[in-house]
Picture 1 (cartoon, rainbow, N blue to C red):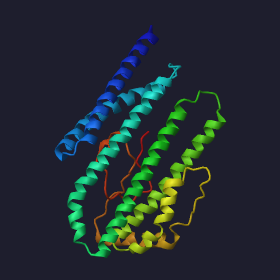
Picture 2 (spheres, one colour):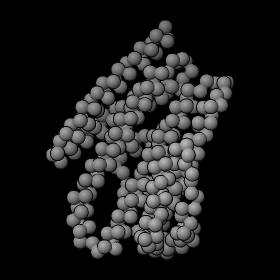
Picture 3 (cartoon, rainbow, N blue to C red):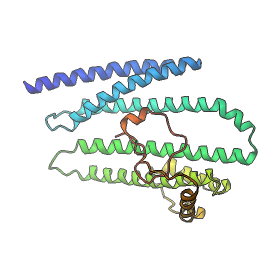
Picture 4 (cartoon, rainbow, N blue to C red):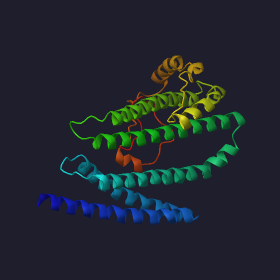
Length: 279
């Protein structure tokens, strides 16, 4: 009797997921089809409301996935992945909306910049977008690890699955290391403690890592940042911060589920802790 009641509750939630995804997709299509800025902003708010509802349903699904009482979890996994896909789409919309809002004012300002300042601004934008993409990779890898761990049967060892989990955890660790280096570069660049030309010299190598780090034949260059002397600069930079600016507590940039619907920061804080994630 208890199982029948549980199954009825699962069916009810999955129906809500289906309806929520349909509503979300309808609003998403409206955003893509209109060129009216005011309408786009309205639709973005509507989209945010729907993604919050879907996230709450996802939390319920996650609790069921962790339960040993439910044997067949395929439909739960499918719906969870569906919601996470919509979460990624919302993040893309939100990022695009913010970029356009900044671009209207930013383009006018950049036209007045001297070439050196413009080159510096472009380099800062590149670093920020690279950090965002690495954070997205971490979110996806962490979600995959959690899914694999949730479907592993107790008392049974799945060596192939364990290897895949270890591989993804290695990706996460390396991405976080690169994010730490890039965030330090960004701060140094913004404070004129490193020249733009030095940053742009490693752009191709960083871009190669960003685009190819999960490919089977990828060969990592562990010395990408060596010429920048970041360890030495970091020590000097920390001294400068202590003398010239108010001290602040280092903030974790680990992304919680609700933070997926918050505006993306244009200047990330220096941190070697966990990055943005979709569990």
